[in-house]
Image 1 (tube, rainbow, N blue to C red):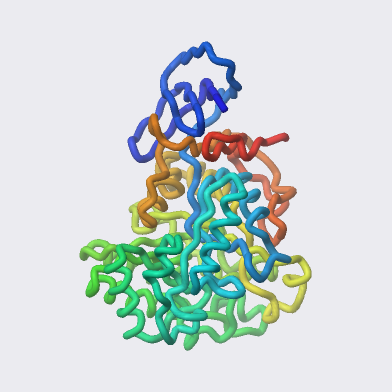
Image 2 (cartoon, rainbow, N blue to C red):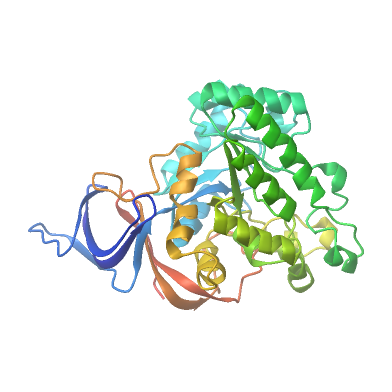
Length: 424
């Protein structure tokens, strides 16, 4: 396939390049970047006037639910949601059924991902059956295709085992991502220990559950030299700890979800279980700290924690509902609406946290635009206002349904092929 993208504003955070130009794609690769490209061959032409052309987004934290929970999401439907949101690469978490603690599960996810058109990768479990008692054969999982390791969804409570895992991560040159929630400070999951919890007659989950574990893991990462990622960071003190850890030389990364930089615990009283997630939405001072962390680079990655659940699973009393919301199809727009439009980040800074920084965490040769490289691109209109009315995901559990947001993906191109086109 030969495709010419004409008249868009190329924005590449890796090189800092920002200019109106054309991009010629041939056989899945970027053949040429330049103004007024002409070609004698027959080709498809795509008018990108008024749009930004950026590297395809990379999400390092999604739950595509296969194997085991295909009633919530399938790898193919998750990939459709990703493409609709401008994502060309995703990293699936390991809490499937069975969990991804063996090579055959890694292989299954990779093989199904190959059928989708985008790049679907997966981490392997840090511990067997995600029980936090014994390490997996991390070397075998890496050979099987795992791109990193995580027990996301469950905290690792054994300090010595965490240290052992980090040492193995260093040996294998692989990053480890951690779900930081000490159950000793979680009385009811999914809601902050504050006014929202009180309104439900619950005690909730303290931010101490997060920052106590982050403090431990930063110390161990510095001791071992491990590369670690703090997943879905949510509290002010947690961000302060990461900032200090980075400043003192730790190889620390931190990701934040769009819902944590957009909402506070007040959303629970408005949206009910649609605003239930782990870690929970916290107070406004925590959200402001997140914005400061995004500004100064303490938080270097935006990841969705895309977590599909069916309508009937959420339509139960709050304590019985599962935690999590979908996020792939609204992430860009929430970033533009709540970060760029409000002066928190520039457009280039937003794109950096959705492209090259996630790529660096998992050692991917992705997240940038260059001649000769795979054509993974997103074309979006930054100022288009649209209403969130439907999803490509198999589940629709989102508090943003019905919201008007800025920034609409017009095309997603993965491996040189158009995998999403906005028909509205």
